Every structure is written in structure tokens, then in C-alpha cells.
Length: 504
Image 1 (cartoon, rainbow, N blue to C red):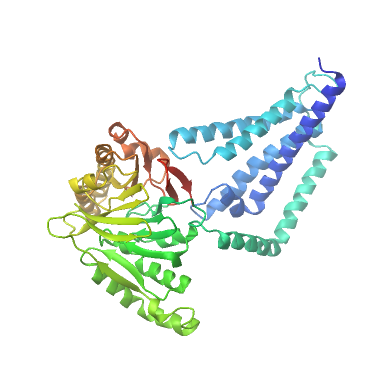
Image 2 (cartoon, rainbow, N blue to C red; image 1 turned 120 degrees about the vertical axis):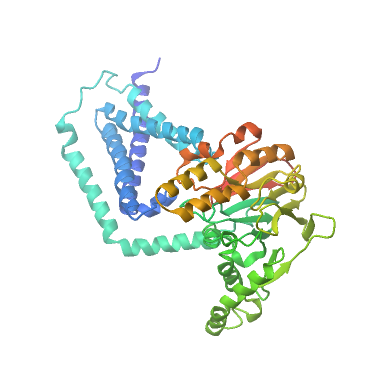
């Protein structure tokens, strides 16, 4: 049996650790109250509207301040049962995270947070259950005098002073934070930090419809240390920058076809690659016939801007020869439905036709690098060319439209007198692939992982994911992922493993 001295030492040690947990939670609450966007970023929370900042201050601030307050009160007074308050909330937080893992179908990116919260829960539970030096007799319920004595009032005063000091010093704190954040951002090297392999990332997983989670179609492929882009939909360039991919290192852009949602950001992309990297060569833009017209139009539209930047920064910083882009059209040899358009540094890129009729010249791409492979479908109906070129690939990145949801939007548009929108909703299922059809293609081609992108309609909340997928998981036995901007799937060389990371 443990002696009373040992029990006392153990109890004191546990209470000290529990007090530190309370202090940590209290500081988090103060952080959310005073610097909501900074702390929200650390928790991967982003307000969709301006009022969201107020919600972060109030809701997150209140949660952590409340847990921290009762945690400290339960450790510095004899009323240990006050620790039940943060225990209940931590338990509910863990239940919420576990529910998200099951329902939201996302990778295990919450593991670190769950471990920390489980540790806090364990320590606080021990602090409640461990006998004190005076024995383990139940404590009477706290009264108002316990909550509002000089100690708690002094604690409240300290918090008020700390919060006031932070608000008064916002200018100085902001500058210090800016330096830290800028240093972290500028030193980050996404491509250089990855082990050798083939990687697929999404800079735009949506379609022409507005979607807070998704820009219009854009993907990037990293093969070793080489960076290539597939399509450049509106908003995708900004997402690439937010992921800290160095646009000056982009080797080429491969266009699947020329719909506006796939080319709308090409001008910004070629400008930032040139200016950000001081490139002396224009950006290569591969595509089927018609790419010459697209490139010529963007070059003309940005010609005044480019000249002004040369005049302002000087030709040493922005060499005139690197402005704009260069069309690299390709065609298919007679009797064949594939052509190798890139073969360099261990990477082979094969273009093949897909079926996006009435759109002509729609293309899919296969990337092969040191035994790993991925295929990007572009916009298409199910077609034999795609099945054949996806054969045995590690990863199939396939567009997906859920017809039942799109037709429901069309019905609603018709009821509200928006006849143009209703007609478009009725038309677009005719030249896209449903999630179930994409799953069948993946199964028939024997791919190892199916990633859906070009998501139609938008899925603003994750509870819609199951509805969007329909019966897709019945037809494909491997993992199926609904694409979200910032997702990176990696295929390191020398194995069959596919890893998932988040860059946003």
C-alpha cells in the first residue's frame, strides 16, 4: 500500500500538471479572444464571412477560457469536482473529432490534436480521482463564495489586464507576428521537402459553380523536383501561392480543353511565374489544336501589363523574353490515340483523347515516374480510351458530376423562373461522368486509389458527401476520396504506398 506521504506527493504532482493544463487552456482562450484569426489558422479554422471572426472570438474564446477557468479553480482550491466541467467538454470535443473521422471521410489529420486532448482528459480525471493528503472524502458543492473570493477576483483581474495589454500593443504584436509568419512562409519549400516520388495536388477541385471550399479546376504534379500544372481554372493560382508552391519553378502547363473554368487563371499564372522567378523563357502551354488561340489571347491581354513591369522593375529582374507563354500544340499520329508530350528527368507524360462531346479535342494525361503512375481524366464521359490509359495506375484523378443533385438544382431553377439555369442543369450531365461511373472505370482499370475532382454540384458541407458519392463505393473496392483544394496525394518511389497530406 502507498503511504500517506507518497499519496500526498502524487496528488500534488498530478494537481500541478492539471494546473498547467488549465493555464494552457486559459492562454488559448485569451489568444482566441485577442488574436482570433491567428489562433484560428493554427486550428485550421477559416471564417467564411466577416461575422465569423466574431464567432471565433466568442465561441472558441468562451470554450477555452471556461475550461481553463474551471480547471485552475479545481486545482488551486479544495473543490476538485470543478474539474468535471473541463473533463465533460474535453470528452465532447473528442467525441466530435471521432464523429468527424467517421462521417466526413477525411484523412487522419486530427491525430495530434486528439492525442493532446486525450492526455489532458487523463490528467484531469486523475486529479479528480487521486486521493489527497486529507483523504478522499467527497467535497461539498461549491458555493458563491468559492467562485467569487479574492483569489478568483485576482485571477479575473489578471486576465483583464493581459487582454487589455494585448489590445493596447496590437501594433507591436502584429509586426512581430508578421515577421515570424513571413519568415516561415518564405523558408518553406514544399517540393524540396518531399521524398523522391510522384505527387498529385489539387489547387482547384471545383467547377464553374461558386464553392467556398473549391476553386475551378487546377491540379499540380510533382515528379522528383519538377513541377507541372494541369489546367488553370479561376482561383487556382491563388491557391497554389497559399500552398507556398514556387510559381517561378513551374516547367509547363497542360490544358485538358479550353472551357473557361479550365483556363481562366492562365494569364495570372504566366505573369507570376515570369515575375516571381525572373524567367527568361516564356511558360510552355501544352494542349490540343486551339491552344495557339488561347495563348495568343492571353499574351495580347497581358502585353501592356508586362511592358509596364519591365519599365518599373528593369529587364534584369523581369527579362522581357520571359513574358507570356508559348503554345505547344500536339496531335495524334494516324491510327493512334496517344502521344508522349514530355519525356525528361525520368518523367513520361502521355496525352490521350477523351469524350467531352460536343467539345472537340478534350484530353486526358497519364504521368509515369520511376514505377509510379497517375492519370488525370479531364472532363469526359466514360470512354474506352480513358479505361485503357488508366490501366494499372496508382491513382486515377477523375472528374465527377452527381446527376440527381444537378437535376434537382434544375428543377428548382425552373420553379423560380430561371429558365437559362434550368436548361444548363439539364444539359451538363450529358458530357460528364457520375461518381458511380468513375468508380466502375477505376475498378475495371485496376487502379489503386480514386480521387474525384471537378465536383458538381458544390458541396459546401461534408454531410452532402455521401449523397454525392451515391453508390460509388459499391463499384470500386479501393479508397475513394472527394477532392478538396490543398489535398496532396504522394506516391514515393520504391513501393506501393500512397500518402495523404494537406497543404492548406
